[in-house]
Amino acid sequence: MDYKKIAASTNTETRDVMKMSEPVGNVYEMVMIIGKRANQLAIEMKQDLDAKLQEFASYSDNLEEVFENHEQIEISRFYEKLPKPSLLAIEEWKDADIYYRNPSKEKEMFG
Image (cartoon, rainbow, N blue to C red; front, side):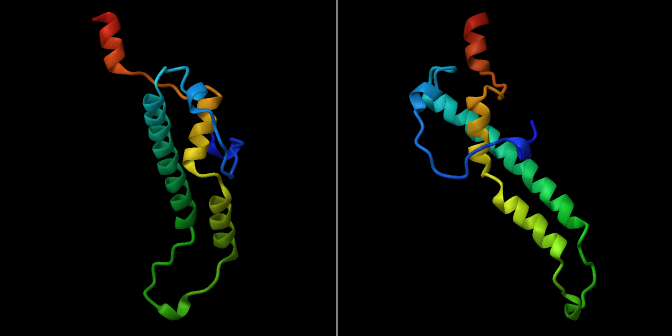
């Protein structure tokens, strides 16, 4: 899923965690799943930003050549305005877009 297209809120919202945890039946397991997905999104976002900013990298050691690059600033502002990875992960969870599995539960079922 493309994190740039997720319509997640950038504001704080009150959520019913008991209702959100119904698919797994455990609030803590839900938090772990959302947390791991948020970490994945954060890494992906960081890699994308680094790749885009790498185009503007200057490899000279001359301090006098430091200048303002408006395209670089716009890219940085775009990524700053994106919702936080945790909010994106919560939105994916609510839309049932996260695939997860619990090996210990599978072991109990197929024992």
